[in-house]
Length: 334
Image 1 (cartoon, rainbow, N blue to C red):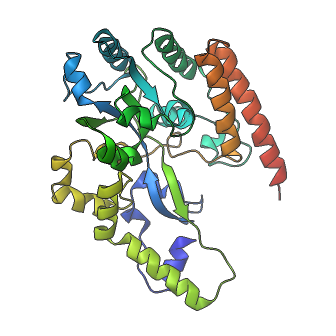
Image 2 (image 1 turned 180 degrees about the horizontal axis):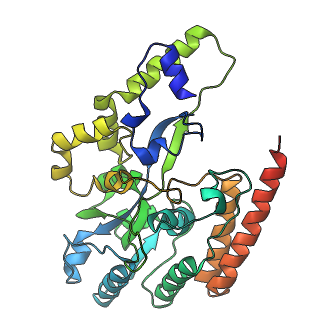
Image 3 (image 1 turned 60 degrees about the vertical axis):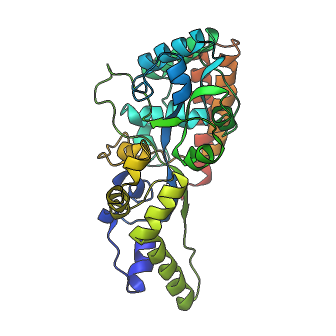
């Protein structure tokens, strides 16, 4: 565990110094922080301010709810824009983060944190309602599917699509490539769902320390982790990339520097994550997650192509995904 590596080397380790939704994801039920969060991101809504102006929309008032996003998309289409809205990482943004943002389970056992017997439940009435809304937007030409993974990101920073739900880490690429003024807003939500918005789910990667190494090597690893925790280092990385500052001190340092005022919207991802998490919103920890996401991609593509109803597609994704979870559970028993 990371805390032990740091403490054994004489460094102070305080889990409370980290953003709760970040540290919670990498922490065991015992309270031990298992791995070191390196590049943590979350889901945001990027939007093209220039196209908003052209459509008669207020560039400083992005849609906060899904109904508002649909209305904005309709105005963008009416102004002549061919691709009002798209999304990258559709399972992560439209089902996983969507669930935690609405304080709704993606899977049982508190999204897998309660044990390997977790099973998927993202075919609930709320999930079906949301995907049906997106499917209706797709039929009206308001939502355009641009492929799996981060492939759709290019459709936003090229100016092809006016709005896109994506990772906060797209900030650096958009800033480098976009030839237009852009904004960053929170992930939209349904205002009639109790307890919404809660917090979005984490993305990115973490560093794990393997056992069986020499004491001197662990001292080196601890020194590196201590360097990465430095508020100035964290703040610089956050400001350059759009990844989250993993500690509250680096967030506060960035705020005091005036970075957020000079670059409006860059604090969006942090503000979505610093809320106190619940058992339903702490994160998602499931086996065979890559396979589950591939299944979700396949089933949602059937919906966008008009080949399957939303309920049938989500039911199939849950059934096929649960088969993956059953395999994982059996393979890891004992």
